[in-house]
Image (cartoon, rainbow, N blue to C red; front, top):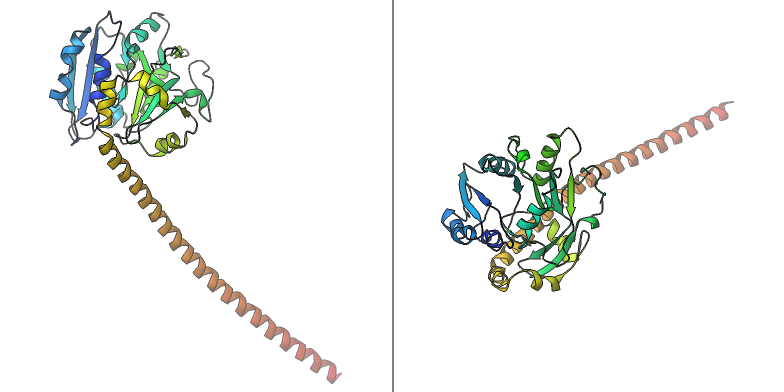
Length: 323
């Protein structure tokens, strides 16, 4: 988790609401010592009773020193998982996983040759505006059909892999694009192509909900959502079929905070643009100054050439008159 105080509950709530679970599972939560907006262990453990009643063997909670990059958090979780763990399921702290995710993941991994699964679809919900769009991986502008489990943009949503691949992740410093970093490190551990399944069994339209507005992701995704551009399509009506009403009510209570955060991000974006405009104006002023100097030089050269030409003409006329 990072800045999980206002929003981390939604992930734990979705985990506590899992259905058709007849196997053991554990939860590992890591926060930063340098994070002033931590959710905190006490708030995390408020969900432990409901989870244990649903098959959870316990919650491991740890605070890492300083402000570790996300890659080192994933590595640490790989080290902390139980020796008996067979499947490592990645879950964002500000996202709501669908109630059948655990049972479906276990069922799909019943194939012993399968290494990795991920989803094509997911709902993205902007907390500030309550606007919802459907993400479709195949709508990406540079979409490539997976071949041998590896493509240029290999990852989807709701990712999970065999636990063995997560026990020895490298100690790299990666802050963004961590899902692809994890995936490529999993690929590197196999001598043969990774066996990947793209789970598209969302017929009941209960996919995960990925919230937007209380995280540090850039505004690029927000602009794509707002304009409903690829890889998103309009799906506002679907949110009522996916999120339980108590969860929606609690999200509605965060609209003011998310709106303030959005305004700050937009203002920051404008400040960045203003700074770039100032740089551009400065560059333009320097260019105009150079053009003005070059114009004066060219004008002087033309004047000199005119005078030289005139002198030559006078010299030639004098020469002919002497002859």
